[in-house]
Length: 133
Image (cartoon, rainbow, N blue to C red; front, side, top):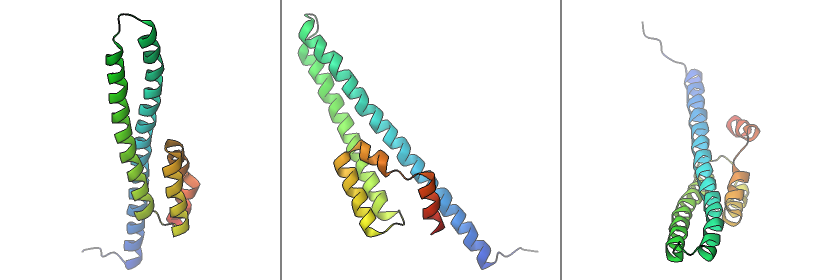
């Protein structure tokens, strides 16, 4: 005999899958933000020794060093822009929060960059409050 689910059971299953999807999307955003942050930190860490070497070492061509710095800057900037757009898209289309909070989050992401995105990420308490609504 086939077991037919009641509407309440179907709703509970739907909420559980929505919560799992929501948590998985937050994890993906967190991983993207970690990669973006580490690439930008790596760029700054790389820039200082290379600029020092280009001034003090006669055997290193400064054009090669600046090419390395500029290419890393372009790659890190493009990836950071992609991450920022992903965060803003997720903020406006996926989060169940009010419009004023969405606007405030967008401004924080745009003007504070990686710091704003780290501040934007919802904590476990905020995630559980959003999923209860």
